[in-house]
Length: 346
Image (cartoon, rainbow, N blue to C red; front, side):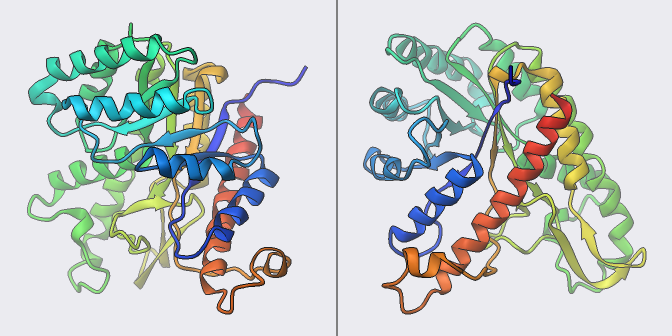
């Protein structure tokens, strides 16, 4: 009998300009890789359209809803429930961001989650709502919040390891350099090289905090959804100006030498990913665990090869198709890492 493994998914969204051939390329490559989609949808119409590109009919799928959904608001809760009611038979979990206002309005937020849970329990397919660690709350507060909803069967946690890692690095660096946000350093700043030892020391604190938080959330005995991506406070790869959402094999080039190297390892790297996967498998039964790669495009291109004539014969300029192909290659390589570690530690 084959061992049960957690669901493995990756971000599935049109983030590069072009027609639906880009999504068809994603569908086919996800299918070949055995990779489920985490759709990003701002409306029910958008999700209906994206579901046409589900990699295979039974592919496990989650949906990341709009980042500005406000669960304190009746309209925000209604939006979540509308998605769940329409698509719960095809989607096992919906993801919403946590909110900066929660510490000041904790009881109101818990009441909102209780209301949503009652509605989800009444639905035939009972989809899950995952609350994503996203806005930089204190990790122990977030875990305590999830402990408070332990009895809400349809509400659970989504831990974004990249968001938590960068938050920890920033907090630790403030103790070393109170006047500077570590993510505000520019690579061409002449004052940066002397600060590299402090930055490296802060980066080293990210993984232990992530592993501790996984262990804490695992004690709840509930489903746990992880957003997997790497990062570094000096990264300039993201077109969105963030320091994370990198692949686990990425290196950060620097215009000077530090410890004999002209590039830096990310906060996790492959060995950190291995530790995260192992900690997750120890903390959570595989049937309750799902892992989603949330890695962004890096602006590089891969040749289309056979996909050129198969999917893009109507394109005169295939630049964006090559950008999409590179992004998909990054997702697949990182998926291979995750699957290797799952097989190793299961």
